[in-house]
Image (tube, rainbow, N blue to C red; front, side, top):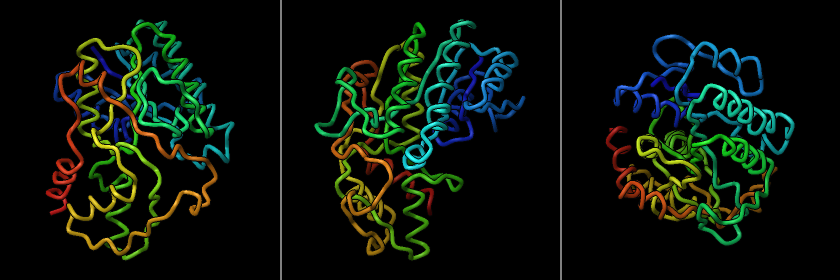
Amino acid sequence: MKALIIGSSGQIGGFLAAGCAAGGMEACGAGVAGEEFRLDLAVPDSIKETFARARPGIVFLCSAMTHVDGCERNPELARRVNALGPALVAEHCRAAGARLVYLSTEYVFDGVAGPYGEDDPTNPVSVYGRTKLEGELAVLAVAGALVIRTTVVYSYDTAAKNFIMQLIANARSGAAMRVPKDQFSNPTYAPALAAAILALVSKGAAGIYNVVGPELMDRYAFALRACAAFGLEPSFLEPQFTSELEQAAARPLRAGLKTGKLVATLGQSLPPVDESLAEIARALK
């Protein structure tokens, strides 16, 4: 079966591409070895052309407009990329009989009473959350579709700008890093996330699954854990309340996701934060 990874040059897509290759599944997408496929979710013709050329049996839709404040400032583009684009991908998957796996977010919740289970009522508080939820609904209209909700995804990747890479860069430069101390989520290690997604696919899982790390913590606590693991002096960190950051979009403060359904299906959870950070610390050395 051939896999089309939309967003293969991104953090999660890259690990999915590597996982597909390790498992003997042919994968294609931007940056993947072999025939080059470039798809822009905001350009319908590029979606149509990519499906015609790739003829995938499964599609991993990892790409999105993920800059939360950018979505708030440009809601029209956010809806084109995060909602209308996935809806078109879903239509092409339905027509081709291809399976569809969609990467979503905890931002579909309001963060009032987390952590949340898959069946809890959604109530996004930002353009990003609303457009991602709209994308979810379009994808779930395809039989057998799998929606993966995740959050605070991190890894060691010198080309990436995830939370951990920003932290390392600021520590090395001595630049102050303002970190919210009142946003609670589950830090999620990207390689483990990709492996869990592929394991769910192999089991024929469908519907919504929360796939996040097992520990709920605020961003500042996560930053301190990372500094301890990497041997960094944490004085460059500036803990602040979200209200002090003057961000354009509202954030779900007490969010996080429950993973009982994931554990019941796979028989295990993702690795704890300290184990994943220790792996990154070895790469740093």
